[in-house]
Image (cartoon, rainbow, N blue to C red; front, side, top):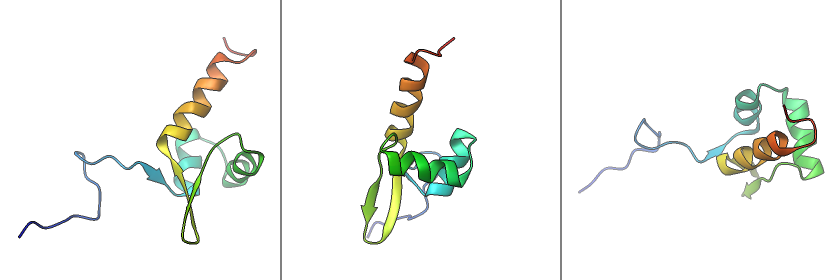
Length: 72
């Protein structure tokens, strides 16, 4: 019988992050992250009562920043 590992390892990258983890990944504060979520600039999902941010949403957000008018 195969066993399942709930903790992602190197072969299983996490695809959903807690708000704090997503903020850390972008090097911003938790408050700023909540502001970006509230404004809709970063997408998130609800799983029950838990808010999670897909890593693809962070990629999309950073891509829009890089393509924006202030891009270097």
